[in-house]
Image (cartoon, rainbow, N blue to C red; front, side, top):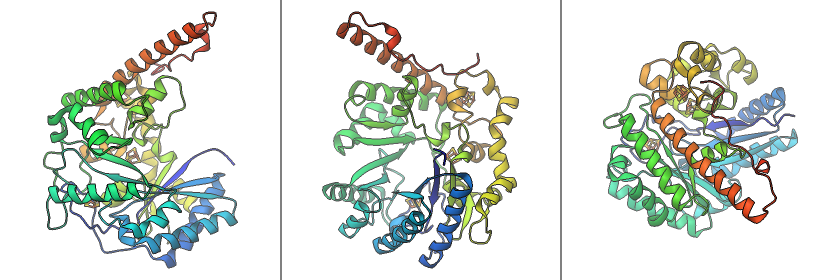
Amino acid sequence: MNGRIFSVILLPTAECNVACDYCFEHKEPHRLSSALLPLLTRRLLDHLEHEGIEECEIYWQGGEAMIMGPAWFAEAGRIMDTAAAARGRRFRHFLQTNLIGYSSAWNEVLHGMFGGELGTSMDFPNTHRKLLNGDAAGYTKTWTRRLHEARDAGIEIGVIAVLHQGSLDVGPEAFYRYFTEELGLKNFQVNTPFPGGPANHDGIHLDDGELGRFLAGLLDVWMERGQGSGVSLGPFDALIQHFTGAPARLPCIWKENCSNQFISVDAKGTVAQCDCWVTSYPEAFFGNIFREPDLTQMLRTSPARRQFVERPKHLVEHEDCLACRWLSICHGGCPVRTYSALGTMLAKDPYCEVYKAVFARAEHHARALLRDRIRLSRQATPAASSTTIRAPKVAAATS
Ligand code: SF4
Ligand code: SF4
Ligand code: SF4
C-alpha cells in the first residue's frame, strides 16, 4: 500500500433545484441508479488495488446532490463501504450541497456517512445564486435558514465563496465580517471564478490587479483576526502552513499535477478530470466507467488525460514558469481555468499574476510568524538555538 490520496468527484445527478447565473451544468434529468453502484464501486476498488491505494475520498456533488434524497445516500454508503471493507479498502465520503433542500431528514445520514460535516456555497454579496423562479435575496434567506438549522443539528459546515465584482467592491473587511460575524463560520474558502461551458458569463471576468489586492487584503484581515483564533480560511491557511514548513494540503489548482489525484464520474459513468470537465468539455472525457472494464487502463491510455499529465512539463518548456520563484508551489495553476479562458490547457493559468500577489503576501506573513516563534522560543528558553525552529520553505528552486 502507498500513502497516495485518490479522490473521486462523484456527481449522482446533474439536476439542480436552484438557478445560479454562472452555472455551467447541463441540467439533464439523469440520476445515478443504485443498481449501478456495485459496478461503479467495483471499478473504483479494482483501480485502488492496481495502484496500491488504501483509501479513496468520494466528493459527492451535483448538480445538487441532495436531490437524490437521504435514503438513496444511506443505501449508496452502505453498498460502497461494505464492498470496500471486504477488499481491505476504505471510502471517506464528503458532501457538497447548496443546502436549499436540507431538512432534519438528512441528519442521520449526515452524522453517519458524512461524519457530521458538509460543504456548501455562498457568495458575498449574493447576486448570482437565485432560487428557481425566484431571486438572489430569496436564495440568501432560505440558505441562511438552512445553515442555522443544520448547525443546530450539530453539523459542521464549510462554505465556498466564489468571488465576483461585487465582492471586490465591498472589500475584504466587509467580506470577512459577513462570513465570520454575520454567519458565525469558522471554516470557509474563496475560489476564483471561471467561465466553464455555456453559461451567462456577464461579470465573471475580474481585473487581475483588483483581485490580487482584494485577496492580499483578505489575507491581511484573516491573519490579524482569524489565523491562530480558530478560523480556517482557504486557501490562505494551507499557504501559511506551506511557507512556515508545516504539512500543508494545498488546493488542487496548485498541486504538482491534479491528474495524479482526481477524477470525476457523472451519473452516466463519464470519467473526466474534475466536475468542471465532466459537465462542460466532452472533448476532454477520459472514457466511461460502466462501459470500460478497467479504470486503471482507461486512465493510463486516454489521450485526453495525457494532456493533463504532460501539462507541467509543457509549461516549463514553453511558458515563463521555469523562471518563476513560485513554481514549486504553483506548478502553472489550474488546467480548467486555463482551458476555459484560452481554449487550451497547454498554457499557464490566466490567474498567474493574482497567484503571485497572494503567494508573496502569504510568504510575508509566514516569515513574520516564524520570527515571532523564534522570539518567543528564545524568551522561553534563553539558551535555545534558533536552529530548533524550522526555516521557511524556499518558494522555488529557480530565479
Ligand atoms: S447550485 Fe450548482 S448546479 Fe445548481 S445552479 Fe448553482 S452552480 Fe448550478
Ligand atoms: S482542472 Fe483545475 S479545478 Fe479541476 S482538478 Fe485540476 S486543478 Fe482542480
Ligand atoms: S505564478 Fe505564474 S509564472 Fe509562476 S508558476 Fe504560477 S502560472 Fe507559472
